[in-house]
Length: 617
Image 1: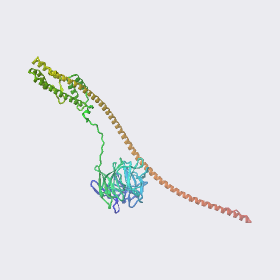
Image 2 (image 1 turned 120 degrees about the vertical axis):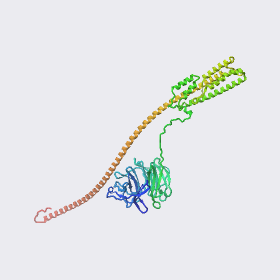
Image 3 (image 1 turned 135 degrees about the horizontal axis):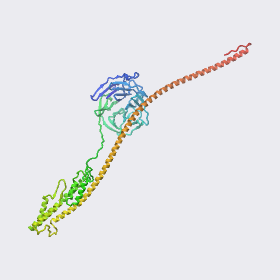
Image 4 (image 1 turned 90 degrees about the vertical axis):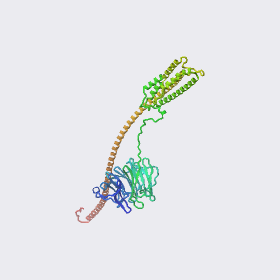
């Protein structure tokens, strides 16, 4: 941080102080003039000053204007080289503004923008000037619209090198809090209508632009100083309060300085000096918290997070159901015994991430419930048979024994088997075989007693034939359910095809969007090239305008000189005409006298006795 000049309370200063943030130490530079940069007609030493503006430009610090001792008539520009620690006075040309203090200077590339201030007679100004750092030419800027009123000790910021913003300041008889902006593309002033916090009028405040946020702190009037730090969002056109300092803070002093320091990827506001009752040399640091807002494109999730009921409507394109499953389903419907087993194999051997998982679960629940019902009915039939056998003699008991042995053999040999990976399934062909074997054994033991007996009380069959009829009825119901499941499966396949079509359209649209994005990037590159060429053309136009302006200034001087010469010539001509008129009058008088003399000579000749020779005049 470079500090130049100021008011120590005992007089103005002209020294240069540098604060190193790595070492946190102050150092005083021994400034010497740079002779080959400073012409002999310009001063070789920076005068003590205050109310000036400091602007950084590469490795140089530019000092513009200010109230100095002795006073100057025009704004002076000094350059301080940080490496050589030497001052040089810039030999400015063009229409140099009058000397002033309390003005604002902002830099845009190689151009300085000066606004307002207070001249040496105490008059407030609101003129706008431009200083070209390449040609060292001052030019007045012409604008339209109602601009800011005359003021001093205001703050200014230049956003995006296109918009100049002016806030606050002191007018002739009041303190201001208005906000104006100047668009350099149209050169039109406009007063901004802000939102949010309404700042009070203040002058002598300091402002720093950091990105799109303009931090303004301190300032006030003759009676009151403000300790809050205001933040103006340039894009939202909105005021807010960032922080409020204590009454002993540096920002409550008059004439303090504020700079933006970016140190180790962090941004700080550094306030220094000023005076309250006595001059201060304190340094305060305010850290700016930068909230990084990142926008990214989020891709679609790979796995479906819908409930199971909704997932049945979605078929995963990565696990399609082929034609083999359909054939298995048809063969399962044709065969009574192996229909459910083939359906379970064709529908449940698929990827569990596919949409058929709901059909598998439904079929699994139905098989489980059917198996439990059948088991329950078998137990009821067994209990009923045992009760009937207990009431009858030994011979009938032996007749029903083959049914019990059939059920035991079915249970032991796994007619009703369960698999952890598949639903319960029944082998109805094996049941019929066991029924035939049981009937055959019963006929061998007792040929007189058939397998199927009819209850004398109820008239219903209690033998194995009744169980087979019950199984066949259950099988018919299961087949009907299988047909409904086939309809659901076909609907799922149709939805899968629709989803595949939709996916193909999405892929095509994505390819089109990528193509459009590539075209847009090419257009952006072309626009960047055009913008770069336009900037070069603008710089050339600025240099040409500067040359034209200098030529115009020189022509104006020549015209003024010629006018002065013409005026002198006209005066001489007028005096010559007066002399000529006097000579003419004198010649006329001489002619009159000659005429009178001729008359007298003639009269004398008439009186004389002898003629005399004529007298020629």
